[in-house]
Image (cartoon, rainbow, N blue to C red; front, side):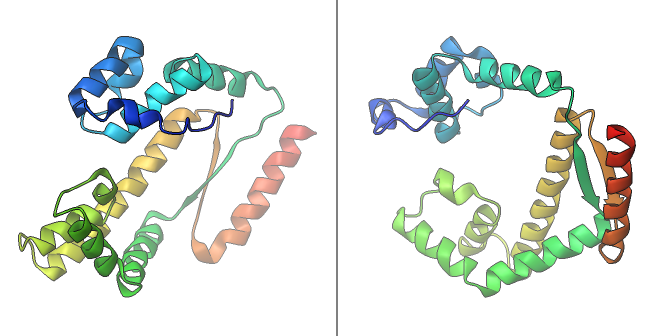
Length: 195
């Protein structure tokens, strides 16, 4: 199901605290509210917007999509799982590239523009760590190390989420230098299933 943002939808909540907005959601879609922190204003309002635009709760939409997804008999789900050590090296290098491309400057400018408030946008991975550095709570090296560590943890949580959501997925672990072998194994699996 596709739905669009409702222009100006969030304006009706401007006078309400984060908790008050979250309580509105909890009254209408308790299951969705349990998965959203009361201070996550964006996700809370988004769940309310989904209800308003579709007439269905976010919980119902997810459940319906999940049932539809698994009722399809012709579906082969393939998951690629790179070698953990190599993946972590790539993540660490990506953090260094983002820093070289100006991530510190971008976060600093955004933090200054919000009068030194930790807004939702600044809670991105990297944002919180850089703000801790700007507040002189951690040094530069610790900041980079934390950014890399938190990015690695996020990647691990993503794998866990996919494995929980896709129990029938055929996972293929591979090393970067042997990716072609994984592709060949995937093709063999597909041929075996569809024949």
